[in-house]
Amino acid sequence: MSSDHRFRPETLMMSYGYKPELSEGAIKCPIFQTSTFVFKNAAAGKHFFEVAYGIKEKGPKEELGLIYSRLNNPDLEILENRLTLWDEAEEGAVFESGLAAITTVMLEFLSPGDLLLFSTPLYGGTDHFIHQVLSRFGIMAVPFHAGQGETELAKMIDSSGRSDRLGMIYLETPANPTNALIDIEMCAKVAARYRKPDRPVPIVVDNTYMGPLWQHPLKLGADLVVYSATKYIGGHSDVIAGACLGRKSLMARVRSLRTFLGNMAGPWTGWLLMRSLETLKPRMETQARNAAQVAEFLQAHPKVEKVYYLGLLDSNDPQFAIYKKQCNSAGAMVSFDIRGGEPEAFRFLDNLKLIRLAVSLGGTESLAEHPASMTHCDIQPDARVGMGITDKLIRLSIGVEYAQDIIWDIDQALEKV
Image (cartoon, rainbow, N blue to C red; front, side):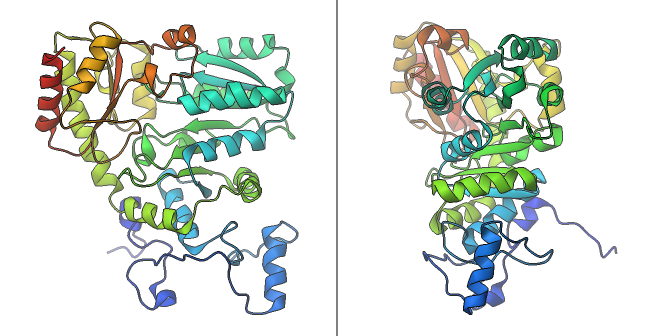
């Protein structure tokens, strides 16, 4: 038998990076609920700070010394190391929310006068930050949508008048809530046209909809991947967190700004996410199986106009080729247009018995929401409709319940419409 056997990520989630002998033999990592750490001596404290602030380089086998929980903490260090395994990233950073991760990345790589190219639709919070916050700093934001190719994107950048100031290409794929796909490799080619030694033009992908299991953007040409760890990573609707993963040179900048914005996740958050990672794969696989059955049921229902689910893409649809190239699964997010409009959508939502009427996604329980009036209500109505987010659209996050129970609930609620 070979001695160089390589464990898979789902196996390593149980113990990777944790040494029980340093914690009285505890089988699971304790919660290091502390604000600060004691130095062995003054020289050690000096060295830790010099490394933390970039005054000196860390040795090849040297671990970053523990200083203060806004900088580092054992729970967060172990968690970040485990997260890197799924995406084969060099480094990771955990935040107090997904939006904290997203906004920190944008603030680090975008400066006043820069150009941001971003895909639509986006999560409502990200869209708000781009249009209501970044705009205050003179950052021009240019949207594009699924189906636009390399030539079109380059033309948009060139016609902006700021092609020499392209700072980032930001993608959310699949898109929330329509499941529209953006070709990551194509966007990487666009970024390469405008990249300079002093301007990295990172491709940043929000991979929340696919989680760490079903899509790996870094392998497809992305430079950084961000998550709302609240969703599939947390998986139990009991923690708010975010994460960013990528290569060391870029992550050093992200981690540095995180320190000074103060949005590092806390020890309790880290411990909860470590717990959740142990069941990530079985949870997500069950959710995906359930979602496939729900989507098939909805597609055949007379009160459903259209279903937005990757597993139902026609092989002749241009999106199908992207799906097969980028995704390992159709995921567990299903959206659909109900026949009618807001009154019919609300009647359906108000008559659900098992599925909870709540925003968020990726938890063990199934959830339903109305994007146009809830998660995406801050987007201008005309723009919202152009993204496919109409009053008849309903978004479902499929959980781990027995699939036929979920379908029964959807069926009985549709009967009330």
